[in-house]
Length: 310
Image 1 (cartoon, helix red, strand yellow):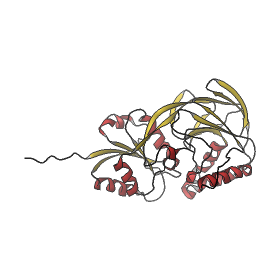
Image 2 (cartoon, one colour; image 1 turned 30 degrees about the vertical axis):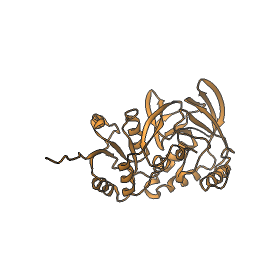
Image 3 (cartoon, helix red, strand yellow; image 1 turned 90 degrees about the horizontal axis):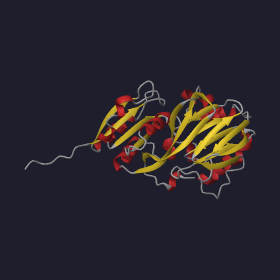
Image 4 (cartoon, helix red, strand yellow; image 1 turned 180 degrees about the vertical axis):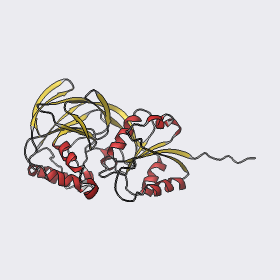
């Protein structure tokens, strides 16, 4: 008799060569997957960020890997929405907030094990419409102080890495505020704020929670309104986040934040404000509309649904 051989499992790796700094551990990751019996087809992210024919035969893969920053991961997650093909958010960027929110390890061998285990969680995605264009996002979309901070960090990331966001934040101690008009599932609200964030996940760097009760799998956004003030007034929120991260008691996390729940959100501002989603700055300004795509994302992770909530 002829022995039956099991065909190798296949993964599609799409990498952004512009992400991150220094020598990449990506070859070690590919080698580790190969040692586990995987065939990895590696493709470079097209210059314009679209995926073209790369995903035409996605059904032949047991996993897709996005190796890049949060923008790369977010775009690929949206392109794969509803397909049932699990995605690994390989952390190859500067902040890698999606990987942090998914509680992924950092080492290439450990990440290869996550792929080999093929454990996944189904989460909501966000869909953003701005200036007549539709985009997807995983974490959050925001207008105001958060976008201005990310904009300032862009020129510092190559030199400072994740600390660029901290430096940029303290370069604008008193962010400007304006009047925002919110439409939340058809209900109108007017707020004075220095930022409005539409959150699907709820953790910032180092998995610090930005607000209570944010879940990526409940079919709703948590809409966060950052009240007018200075960055120094946000210190109690930071302290509460640290307490929550260290399990030192129930955090308040709402001293300078007002929050709402909605599955469709329209944000209009009295004056145009810069816009970011999933940590990427864009040319578009407010207004924008966001809607939840329930259960449209499938991510590889060893974490449970409960561990992804704040």
